[in-house]
Image (cartoon, rainbow, N blue to C red; front, side):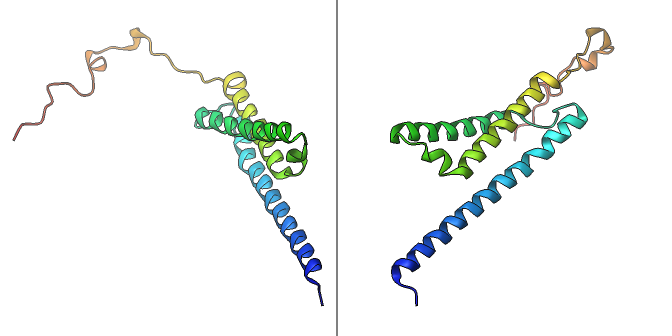
Length: 141
């Protein structure tokens, strides 16, 4: 029969194993989440269709998470926040790495080429008129 102290040690070990497993799954899913977008941007040589705002917000979250661990480590005078919570450390590093890749793809490698309409291309007056004019009021009841 297990004594209560041995049972609690086994339960703590199982809880720790469960946390490590779940954080490993989360890190793996994050890599799966980002890889297709990076690959498709490379194949298409374009970042059209992806919003850079969400990438910048995700980057700020990854940097904030890493900064939180750094501040806690400095406050506690211990690096246990980094190697004790390897899932959070890997998650923030992977997010920041992919976000920097996406920013590089968006602004450096594949900048969008906006088509400019020359004034010479506008041939009729209808192209210059607004779609809705102030004359199109609904009749008052």
